[in-house]
Length: 294
Image 1 (tube, rainbow, N blue to C red):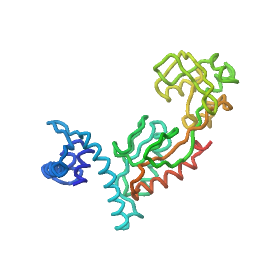
Image 2: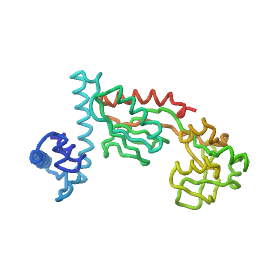
Image 3: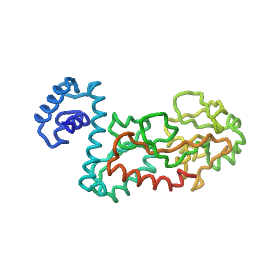
Image 4: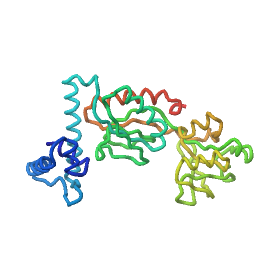
């Protein structure tokens, strides 16, 4: 019954739940009705076109996912598949970091574990793991208090960078205040006023009025490579450029404290074999990646 409920919740329809569980649609509908009758609570609101979780249903789904994960882990141990992981793993990471550094790990992981499949979501927002059914997330930055287990795999520097040609033509800034005399590429695209913070505690504030603002890191770095001006980035985003000599960092002594990079997953739930294998696999790859430790 719980598997039926989770399948309907995740697919957003009784037909989708039926396909996911291998049951007929009428069987799934009857199963959900029986579950709601037993609980004395409405779990879904139904229209002719869509099925949505109620507030009670959303809360219940979080508990059900934990229960199903525990059952799967128990089944793995009993059947011996703990050493041979199977099933679907849902992973999320920031867009740019996911494309550059997580996707290659996933390809190698899937080759190493052919009975595991992966649903990989890259998105620049903090995903609620329980609500969205995510097994593990890559997080860059300090973690607020939460019910998550975190495994640190490296760190990221917040850097100012520009092309060698630009720095030859306009000079290398010696202090953060010198940025007020440089052409600045702001990666924001929203406000004309930008504050860049420096120092280990980020307490040295430089207020800038850039003539150029962009909404994406890729565009900002493209303009910096062309020698238009200086921009802000995380060290992993410019690693290949620094190695190739197309960008170089400035103001290193004034950089803020590095940002930690973690793999996070839900606390209090038994880790499935596939999740445990992925955590071990990804941890080793990321901890040895120069871009996360240099």
